Image 1 (cartoon, rainbow, N blue to C red):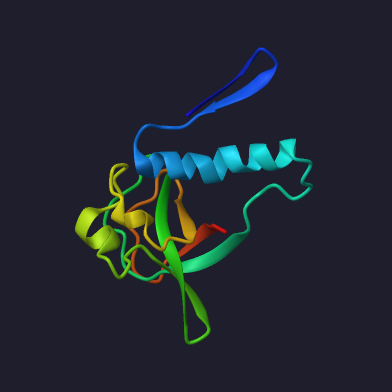
Image 2 (cartoon, rainbow, N blue to C red):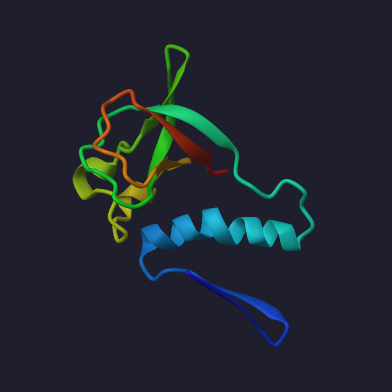
Length: 128
């Protein structure tokens, strides 16, 4: 992602792959646009959720996962899989379009995280 000023105008350039472009749009471009429109509350709502399924990959750098909010027995869960196959079939790769279907959360996995078990608590951002 890139941002710059050109002739007094702000230019925001998103990644070319769909997954990274959507994450850049929500986490960087949308708050910037809201600020330019005069909004006071520009950040996405943050929630704490449990992983619905384990994350079997360590995270050397901070990762943002696309998923959806599930409420079961009064508890909030982050589910990376959707009814179309989501992350199980195509993964969270930048070119995976199925992970964008029905997603309403961006889950943040901190840099240096080991693989995470089902039920691990993570920070997530509500997409609305």
